[in-house]
Length: 291
Image (tube, rainbow, N blue to C red; front, side, top):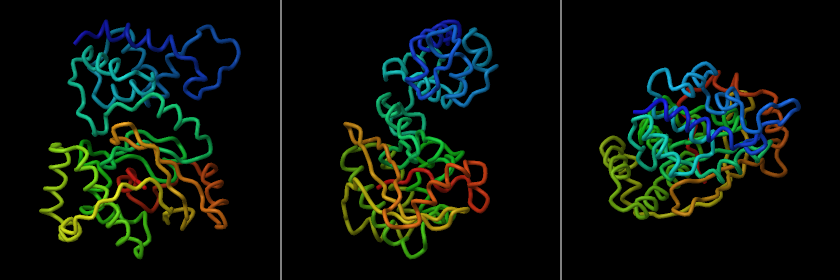
């Protein structure tokens, strides 16, 4: 671990990014061409004091989750992300987990979807990053890490995960999830995370065993969904996907179905914000949706 080098690296990456590159207003009277330290802290979800200590080469060793957030905030390439983890004395996260690298181009596109809920998830439905409207619509990520954070896994193991969908749609969602998991399994081969999820769900869920035995395979690129929001009620949305080259990550965005009251409801979502979205629902039941 080399916190002094870590601080210097963070500052060098901060200096090269313009506010407009990450969706922040430029404003007048800026004395730096790159990002301010408080702006990086805001983008990474850290306190300003904590980030200042990191750039000074002081403080404690940053966690894997914080390093991943900093890598995304600073739009680091995969090689730069790996270097950041090495400087912090942390092993590089395995692909497919919550701390996985997200391509800067995918992040930029997500942040440019102004007024549209959008998020990046893995092919196992682990949520990696989301914009404020997606958080307002779908809720924050769970506190768990690794493949147990997968929405697919929690769909079969946690009844609270199903409150997002109307009960009459559960059978359709189950079929979709299992068929897409089989497609992911074929792409990944003997991947330990896929093996772990399949093994755990086979042991815990008779419903999963029944559907897995059907050998259905489906790689879904778009879908029409009905979602239940605790404040807005039933929403009908189109869920569309943009896939990474290896198929392991997906940028999802949600648009209201034309001709429904969901158009007005999603406009209201921006007004409601994220403060009240969990009034009637667990904070751990919603991310990782997929088409």
